Image (cartoon, rainbow, N blue to C red; front, side):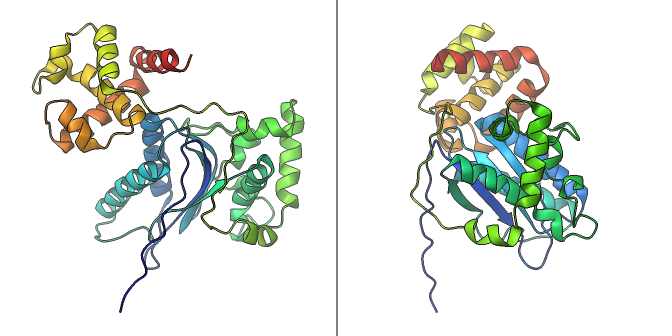
Length: 307
């Protein structure tokens, strides 16, 4: 008995992707609402690291759909890291072992504005087969449609709904009415074939600005030292409490903007362990999520490079 090798995933650093994740047949991917909340929270943490954008989503019991603008990041690195973290959390909470996700995540490159808008409608129509939502997908809690229509705020800060909604018109209320009518008009079964996952070598540029991830770690370290006022030598000291925040910000930026694997960052910071790099990255996420001064430092670095 032999198995065919996996086909190489078609990826582009500036692509928008339709991403779908699905559970193995034995277990639901999201047993309860807390699981869905946890996945969105963990996706937000990865968004903080890698700076990708989410244009639409819908989370069901056994699968979930997302429209993700990679914004120059590696979509595989994002999704593999996110799904691994969620699987570990899921197994711990539900006292189980083994796989949670069915094979790799699936992805398809979005190649036109028309396809992008139609895809968002397809995703937002996913709840139609759930009892109680047959004629009102906008009432489903774990879909971005409510945010599109102004029925609730995006509490996670994950979503960029404006990118698609601006295609529906400048007047917000008219755009919302127009979009909801479009969602109702889209036949989910007819759209299903068009949305099937096949790796395709297509490219979609539109007018988006994409962040190029080719920064050097030396430049990042020098910038962080200047902004935080610590000596460069301190960045390489393993057990000093005085450099923790600076090292955390540097690790966060290196993971986000250098396209480095964790083991490479370990070497750069004096052969520290991979678990320590992961911990520093988590600290960095927490710092820029809770304190404006650290968020401003990261934003300043990015703005200086793209301007």
